[in-house]
Image (cartoon, rainbow, N blue to C red):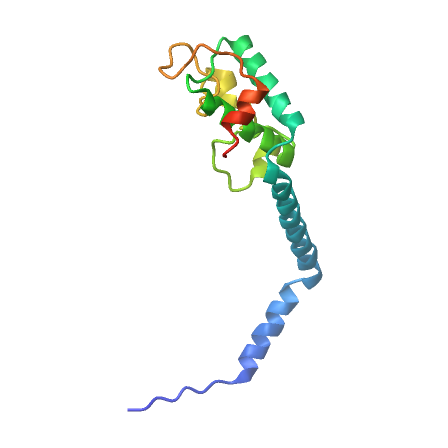
Length: 163
């Protein structure tokens, strides 16, 4: 048994012209350019982080963490390397996004999340309920809470050198 399917080029051509008429090609070009610019900006930001975050933002986030812990009566994790890694992540996000976006969460669009501000440190759950899932700011009743509310810049650098 043999089947033959007859196709005409006319319906395909009509479909193409119909779709072309509905799409404004000039409106698509800026979107493509913007995407390329965002990708380029992301690559440039990542290239800057090859050596880690800037010393300036690392120090800013370290000082902020100390002041916030003291001001809220919270403590750093008993394993200070956890504290150091979170501080480094906050500094990297401050370098690349302009805001200390929580480094312990996954985001589909980091830039949009940073603009929204909900997950910028201190995040809303921390401010409202003293819940920090990064383990940067722990209440004294937390099993992982240490006794420290301070960490040196040298310790942050030393503990995160391999990350």
